[in-house]
Length: 314
Image (tube, helix red, strand yellow):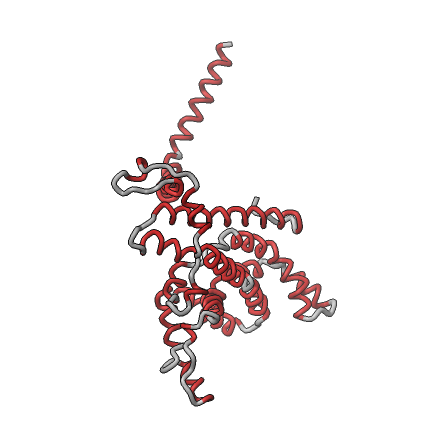
């Protein structure tokens, strides 16, 4: 009996030094954990403002509860339909461009010249590092009806001043989405190019011996190899489908294209910070409503993907 007790005690003693010898690893883990808790979870306490009438004198904790009034005011607002339709339309329009980096990666993988391939990759990566402010400035300069490239070409062809595209509400979605494609197509293709490099070369050799063309090999070998990666990224993207970028939309926005450019993110800014009243409660309610839609979308898309293709996040 004493021998058994001694063995258990020795085992505990052996385990403790092993844990203490790895304290540096736990210290490294503590830093990102503290960062997530402080900057991701602690701010979530502010969600309660969505159910309160915020009074700056009383503070967040002492402000009176008003239940769902902030949500009801938003749903009854004349802006509700417009901002929701604009957000959904821009989101799904942007989602339709999801295959572009996949197609770009597939065709770039077919290029044999390494120097040309690297040059194309570098050129397409560069726009990703352009800031949003500079990007919108480039759009304004390019589509300037007087001195821009668009205005110069239009005047040379038709002999008159071009219509202002930045003031055209119908043109706003196209300019927003396709300028985003130009800026991100190279960067978003990196993960697909990396997946394609992992394809077994023997599969291509066997298909080539059987007489398969390069296009057929791309369809039957390359596409299935990157399909799981594409499905995962599509699910993640659907989870943020309602999060239209505030900075770019707000910078491209003006009074003439407002009916197409007013989305939830810009409306939250105007309700919470830009307006004289500073209705923080209603702004929080609108943001929470947007987040709930994203949450439901990612669960729905993940469930559909799991049932159809057996690929899912969880």
